[in-house]
Picture 1 (cartoon, helix red, strand yellow):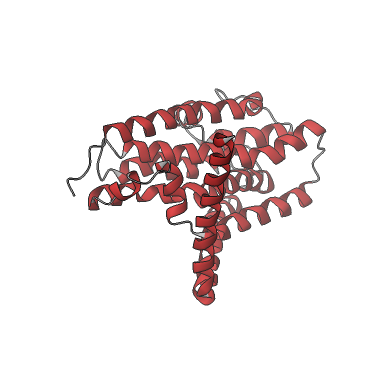
Picture 2: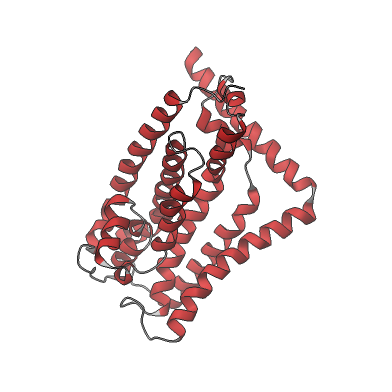
Length: 273
């Protein structure tokens, strides 16, 4: 009985911590809503690039504007949800450099859970709201012939995408224990992957397409499932049926991320503070 009670108590502790972060942010409501709107416009700015590209060309990578917008909406919603939950892991290099990580390590809670709850920023939800808005508008205008299977894929894709991008955040955090202050290096595949994921995968050169599918599974978060939902075939090295295996990609990248995170913590010997 003690173990389930301990798990329940730990869950309550995390919910209490996140609740206190949200309440503190809502105390200054004007500042919170300004930041929320900024986050919303960040998503709008990224979407504008897709619009400008397709304003001057009828198709992008074989997709029309609405089809490319579906890819953007799925991938961007997944990344926005991952950024909301795991974005704080980006702070690992600062904690390592300032020697303040020890304060987390002496507490009787998992380090990753503490990192998630330490600086939970609800304002990041603005980006997810924009991506969801894009998805709703696109689905209304495209009039897709959805089956039960493609409907379930449509609903699951943002969740699986969030899991994949969340794993990339954790993997990047784990690597920081070896390459102190290597933020730019890890950003290349975390934020670079997010950028590649919201574009039609067919526009990527073949080596880049393979990299962002089988090494960093960014195209699995939007483009490949969108092909299945729209009933389109995929380009070389990126068949549409891979979309059904998105959860397998998520489990694989989380296995790698968990290993990097655990090895990184074991390697860390403190900053001497």
